[in-house]
Length: 369
Image (cartoon, rainbow, N blue to C red; front, side, top):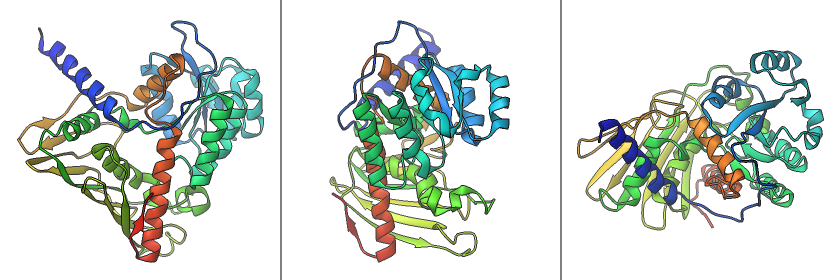
C-alpha cells in the first residue's frame, strides 16, 4: 500500500467520522423530483460580487454534480461579462425583478444566494416560489423571523434549503471535530476562537446596519461562533459580551470589535472575539484534560493548518471548499437526503448572535433557550 493510498484512506475515514458527528436538526423538505443518473444540477448565482466572482464561479470547475447554468444580477454590464466568460444562455440570465420567471426554466435546479445579508430572505422566498432549491450564504439573514420565513417557504415548496457553512466540509476543521468528539485529549474544557481583519473602504455595505445586520460578528465572527458549536457538538446555555468602537465615524452604524463568552451544558467555556480594527486573529484553540489542538488559520478559503499538543501537525490536503459544499448539496437533492447545514443551523446562529448583541448592549448575561 502506497503512502498516497494510506493518506487518502485515512482522510476519508476522518471526514466520514467527523461529518457524521456534526449537528443535524429539523424537518427535512422533500426533493422535488428524482434526477437522471449522472445529471449535473444547474445552479444560478444570485449576486455577482467578489465572492461569486473569485470563489464560487471558479469552484464549479472542481465539482462533480454541479454546473453554472444561470445568473441573477442588477448590473447589465456584469451580465454581459459573465455570459461571455461562462457561455451562459440568454434565457438563463435574470435580474432581481424577473426572478419569478425562473419557475419556467427547468435548466436551473438550485439558486445560490450571494447578496447582502438583509436581502437573503427576499431572494430565497423568490427562489422557493419558483420551485428551486436554495443554497444561501451565511449569515442566513439579519433576524430570526426572516430565517424562519426562509425555512417555511422552502418546506412549503418542497425544496431543500442549505446555508453556506463551507467549513463543515473542510478537512482540517473536520479533523479537529474528530479530535474533540473522540476525546483524543480527554474532555474539552475551554475554547478560544477569533476572526477579524482591518476594514478598509468606509462606503461598503458591510458597514450599513440595514444591509449587514451588524458588524464583524455577522460577517466573520460567525466563524468563531460556529467553531465552538461544531467542536463541542452542543448549543450554548448563556452568553456575556462587550462591544467597543474607537472610530465612531466609520463605525457609526455597526460595532467595530466585540468579545463574548459562551457557556455550554457540558461545562465548556468558549471565549471568542471579532473585529474590523485589525488583522491576525484567524483561528481557534481547544483545550482538553490532557492536551490541546487547533487551527491557525482556520477559516480562510484555503491554507488551513494547525497543531496538536503532542507535537503532531494538522495539515490535511487543501480541497476546494465551495466545490465540496455545492457537491454535497447536489447529492442531498439527487438522493433526497437531508443536508448537514440546513436552514435550522443558520437560524440557531442568528438567535445566538442576537443574544450576543443583547448581552453587549445590556451588560448582562443572557440565557439561551
